[in-house]
Amino acid sequence: MLNFSPRREKRPAGARGYRAYAVGDIHGRVDLLEHLLAKIHSDLQRRPARKTLLVFVGDLVDRGPSSAQVIERLRCYRRDGIETVFLLGNHEEVLLRVIQGDSSVVDSWLKFGGLECLQSYGVKLSAIRGRSAEHIVELVRATVPREHVEFLESFADSCRFGDYLFVHAGIRPGIEIDQQTQSDLRWIRDPFLYDETDHGVVVVHGHTISDEVEERTNRIGIDTGAYRSGILTALAIEGSERWLIDTRRGARGGD
Image (cartoon, rainbow, N blue to C red; front, side):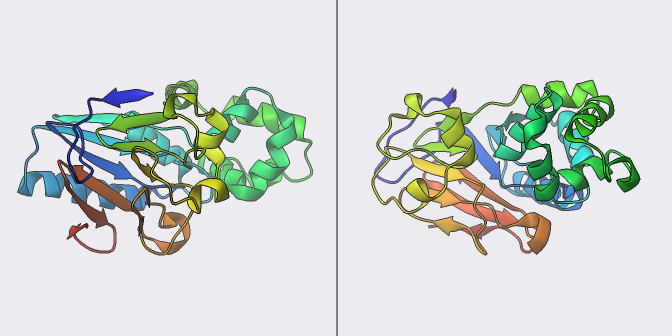
């Protein structure tokens, strides 16, 4: 787990001296990614930060039309004063499993966005139709560049930021943060989403789509369904302040 030193206040606060922007699930929408990055850069120009952390909470790939382009854009992203953190989502996990030779997940992967992912790498439907899972595994391994695989393999599972914890899906209630399993961090829904207890941190997560950012006392869901809604969202945190930036509107205040 990446850890940025906590700072305790009555209201939840980010790590001292840092501003963070946490970006929700992109799912192959490089157009929205470019739009949101431009808004984040503009926000930084209007009110500069001493240090900036740009966190992507996972699910860069699948569903939308441009998975390969999203990966390449973020793999090569560099900007002075901005440190990037990438968290592994369940969709990256499945893609990596396919690349590692797991044919058992191929059918479900193709149904839940893998087909669009392959097409973004230039694979034609005719190369997939009627083919065995084993054949598709080999096709994926031959198609996805090694640089992209290594980039995905470098992703973390969580990032502590002061009184906040960034993860992809959520955490298992009642389990210490450092004892959470990768499976829960990447896949959990109901046991986490409907729990109202104090986790000791405010969990910022994607994975579960909501029409608007879902802000509760113990969690903030930032997956606004970019691939189907056209709305990609970032949550900004600095000290005890937080605000939202998305591809639909300018920045606005949080609680």
